[in-house]
Image 1 (cartoon, rainbow, N blue to C red):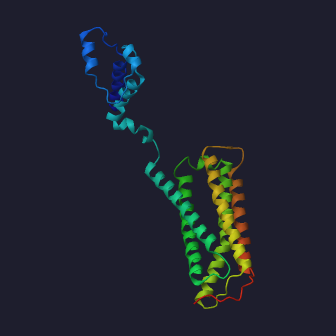
Image 2: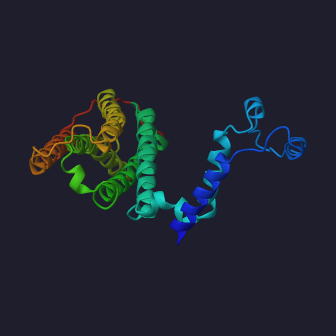
Image 3: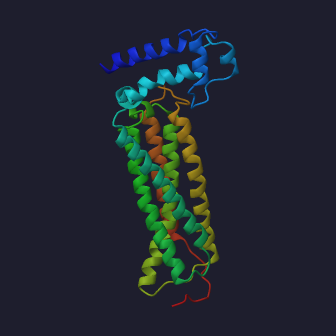
Length: 275
């Protein structure tokens, strides 16, 4: 029913736009020209000289009226989208998580330094907790977008850039374990009253990790934009091999950074923290 309304309205509006105009010498034409109603300024000198000429603007506006009058036709573009509200919320959560992670990393990057006071130690601890929360959110929403929404896992599994993105996420997450372990150790030591001032060596290493995380955050969205557009799509490479490689990178680097954090030897300064 709605489709028939739309088709008849489109035919009627188009035919009216192409209909011949009355002759300029007639009384009716002169009367219309004196009381012309043109709020959109669609008439011009060319149409005045050639009354039978078709004005594209008028045809477009007249043809668009059935779209406005028929909501079901106007929403046809999203009628077949699978769970559009859920997909939109998942995308929104994904972007918010990315922004939140960037903010937490920047707090750590700008706060970490030798001989931090108690307030600065607390600030990086809170920032690291926030980074973990936003990390869980971005992983969850990323999973939903890859499996439940968007193009689906059948597409992404054969996209090498998808697995490259997953590998970069693994590098990001694994490298963040170094700062997380150090911050947890320092928070426990502070609670027990055994916290030593942070030295130059440890602060430099933690700042390097923050810089690496910021670099990863700029690269991962770039791979995502190419991935979503099917750049490099291929079904020749088994996705299981790509997934295994990404998992191996994450596990291997996680072990490396956690071990480094647990065995790291700093050169603490003699300056005591403020009480």
